[in-house]
Amino acid sequence: MFNKQRHLPVLIGAMACMISASAVVPMTQASAWFHKHAHTVNSETAPSGIAGKIIVVDAGHGGKDSGARGVDGLQEKDITLAVAQRLIAYLHEAGAIVVPTRTTDVDLATDEDRANRRRHLGDLRGRMNVVRKQKIDAFVSIHCNAAPAADWHGAQVLYFATNDHAKTLASLMQDEFREELLPTKREIESNRSLYLLKRIGGPTVLAEIGFLTNPQEAMAMRTRSYQDKVAFAMYQALVRYFSDPSVGKTPQES
Image 1: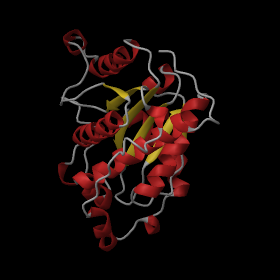
Image 2 (image 1 turned 90 degrees about the horizontal axis):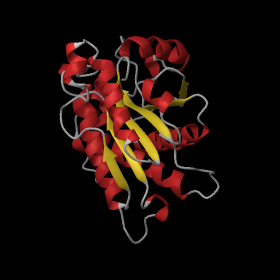
Image 3 (image 1 turned 90 degrees about the vertical axis):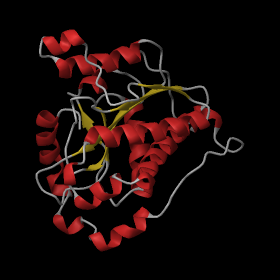
């Protein structure tokens, strides 16, 4: 997640009525999601709308900032980086120009930020600096969720409340999550406080890809095959967004 202390209470308050313990798929059904599953992008048939688009892929957290911690010590920063690497590969295959915010286990704060005890804000500013270096067409930030109760589950996409382009991409991505991933009853959620969503226009979304504190989702997110499913779902949403002529899109202004 982005800001655990601020975001989790909002999430709990908004979504409690949508999630119940009875909605969790029993662990005995999980095996079907762990078969070897790899997708390939066919360059001859892939929609051309995404080719040449400049897309920032942001793997949340990193370095000393592990993000959320889940079952058996699973760390958010590791899962987000693994999924980001797979998403980058799919986008490259389709002809997109991909700009990652990080490719290794680091954060983007400066030494001065750390010395002045503002590492978290410095890290977010570092990610913004990546965006400001070029005019981009989309921004996807990858995170994992956590909750006090183990039965909370499901992937969910967030967007800035007044950003219509972001809402469109979020809806497409949530549809793909329902199709590709473990069952979720979650809907897209608008937000007015998350640092990057507020500051980056155009199709900018934050994807919470599952709960590390849910045993079934944690088990899935550990596997390469499920990480690939998440990445491919995001890729398909971006392809649909940029290939749909009915969606009025303009490159965002950083």
